[in-house]
Length: 313
Image (cartoon, rainbow, N blue to C red; front, side):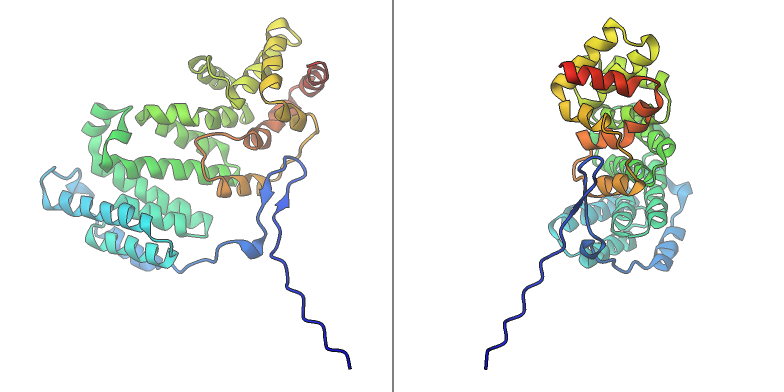
């Protein structure tokens, strides 16, 4: 009698690729499991905040409790992998100081619901804005990253821009990126590609031109391809537009190939890229194609012009 063959081990689910751009999708089975967040408790803690008491005096007990809570949330939770423990630490920070803006942002990152994320990030933004006060904004605009007490505010703005991009709500994503740029100069440089892509896709070409002027010497994906597209929209198959598109193709040939292959990205493509791209400071080629392909397709003659130049370069 033959021995039964041992059962084959099932392979882990593979990541899927979007045909349009090559962006990897993660199967639903491999997504992180959700954790329980007590929103009734959050509401109770938030209700304790006395907004009239803001901003706290530098040496006050309230400021001391706030700084200790922020330290607890950011420093301690950064060394812990368990999401349940991170959640518990965030709640401990809020119990210590309901004004701990960073804790609201942390809980928003842990939440699986987009609506809950937005609500928690906005609470973090609101609390941080009141805690810093108008004088702080006036004195330190452009250099918020140098102040520990301002970092939760910056993080809340970035997370809101990120989640609105995830939803395909580019108007709100632009709004929060611009708010971020108003208070942090470094963010303008690291995130200008994101803003350029969103402005282009939203048809806000004059604003895109203003951003291009500021970063005219940069050779990033969004700068090179946006400049080429805007020049083509203005002057058609001109010398300036041709020089710009040739420079873009020379440096990022795969972007031209993807744009001319008639990509049709879905919101799922955008969602997966935004959710799983660990560094949104640097805009990937895939991001540009996902966000800006419609702007190219809707500009009459732009795709055929790009395809012709791609063949010749």
